[in-house]
Image 1 (spheres, protein in one colour):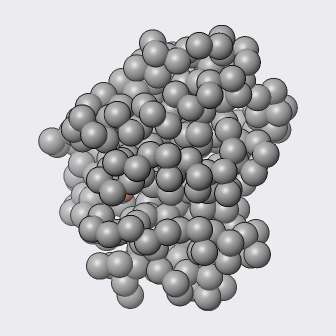
Image 2: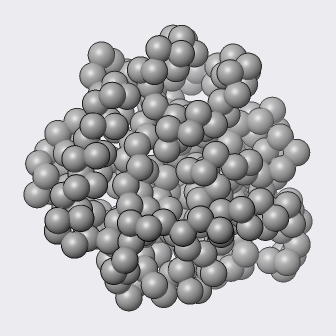
Length: 296
Ligand SMILES: [Fe+2]
C-alpha cells in the first residue's frame, strides 16, 4: 500500500481555495468538532448526505427530532451538513427546490436559537429519472449546496438502471453526478467492477460511512472497501435519517479508513472532497477516474 503522500497533489491545490473561506456561522464549535478540524487542518467538516430536515421525507418527522439529529452530528464532529431530502421516485411532486431552501432557512434560524453550531446547506437525494435534465432547468431538483456543479443521484433498490446516459446528458449542463451508496444496491455490490467502469467514464461515488463498519451487512462492507482500496471513491457520508437505530458516525468511518488505508485517504474522502463538492470545486482528477493515486 502506498503512503498517503502518494495522493493527488491537485486536490490539495484546489483545496487551498476552500481554506480561505471560513464559515461565519460557527462561533461555538464543540470539542469534537474542533478536534476534527485541527486534526485535518480544515475549516469545515462536511457531511454531504443527510436527511436532517423535518417533515419532508423519511428523516425526522418533527423539529424536535431534527434537532436531536443535529446535536448528534455536532457531537460526532460534523460542522456542516448538506440537507438531502429525497426527491422524485416515491416523493415525486414533493420536496421541490423552493421548499427545501425554505426549510433550510427555517432550520438555520432554529439551530442558531438553540446554540447548535451546525451549518446547514440545501441539497437533495435525487432518484434517477429521465426528466432530471429538464427539472434542473425548471429549478425543481436540487444540486449539491445549490452550486449547480454536482447532483446526488440515487438508483432504484430493485433493479439496475445505468446512470451513464443521464451522466452524459447532465454533463452538457455542467452538472456532474455523485452516485449515492452504490455498495447498498445488491446488484452493484455483486458486480463492483462494473461500477469502476462507470467511474472511469466520469461518475463519482459516495459510500455510506456505516457500510464501512459493517452496519449494512457483509456484502455492502466488502463492496465499499473494494472501491475505497482501488481509489475510486470520491466521498463518504452518513446518509443519516435519525439518531436511532443508528446515530450518524462519520468518526467511525474516518477511524476505519485511517487504520486501513491511511490518514490521507480518510482526509480526501471524508473531508476534502465533501468540502470541495459544496463549494462546486473539482473533485478527483482525470475525469474522476481516481481520487487517491497509488491505491490501485
Ligand atoms: Fe439518502
